[in-house]
Image (cartoon, rainbow, N blue to C red; front, side, top):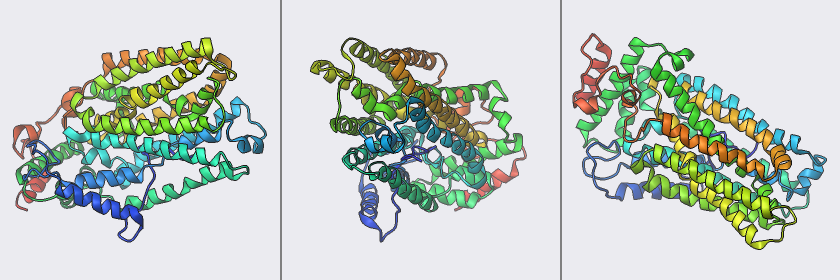
Length: 502
């Protein structure tokens, strides 16, 4: 298992949050205190702000801690291990050819496919601690809080790249064994860390545990001062979930049971498939090979890879913090798709005229490096990177959300397997023409987004039925009333009434 991106699904280096463990625990404490002290302008429609205008520290704390736990779970290390700079790896495995290299990388992705498939069933059965991010995030900040997944994936790639850079100087089997073995630590910590996360309040309601759900909602709000909004939010959750349970069954065929559900499923799968067909994982897994094709060699190949990773983390952080929740989901996807197409077209031209492992054209090398970095660290990091995970996690109704996101993530990994297997062969056989394949797919990605993707910015998870045209009951946050179902749904009315007196 490579320094895994078996994420969300999920991503990240994980640290165990315990009052007696490491500097990270002290940082986590300081983070929470800082969140408690920070004053921001109140938003009356926000699930994140309390009535004093102070940001609810618990939402940020739970979400940031979850993301920090995810930091190294990416596949960044495999790009270093299979590169020519890791000569001990190639010697140990008797100089594997392109087919074998592709199989090594794609086998990892194949394992993640089955893990993602199992997660859909497990999330409904034992809890949502893998999909809790979107279910605790307020609508106006869901892009930021869910987009942190991609930011932590980027941090994982960054850590993996620099581990690879350092280990390339070892001249024994530790050169490749150490980077692969280090992954075991965050995987164990991720497992242990799951036990300190709260359950999703929506999942608790679906299990008939309204008291616990109410406690989680109160905990995430930070205090009891914004009671009216909290009660309406809780009422919307209860009524929507109880209505779905009374009128629907959760089964796999729900994913295509209606026109609206077909659109949800195809859109969610499309955003993940399009993400893979940007060509990002060709860069992520085989970036050293791309630099070698420009005539670069030696330790600086992995150093440039590490620098690229650092830039990607910075750009993603700025994007999800200041831009994504303001401009929505569609504009960044369109911008990124066409921007990546332009970068790869220029890269193909550079490689066609001045490329090759023996190239000495310094200006061409620098330009080629620049457009590889712009492709990933600018255009991908401000589009499909974070947006794909945000989008797929917010479009499905509660009863089918876990299964729907699992299917979408499986589509991601299945496409990943395909691209990982053929990329080494394509780079060898096609050379610069391999870039043109992804120029075409990125243009198609942009057109697909324009034609078929609805905008979801600012909507609560319950309000997505309005976006996709299958709204069945009024939303409490719109009607400002706790009771919007006028039939004999006594259980949800009782639950809401009970918590109105808390």
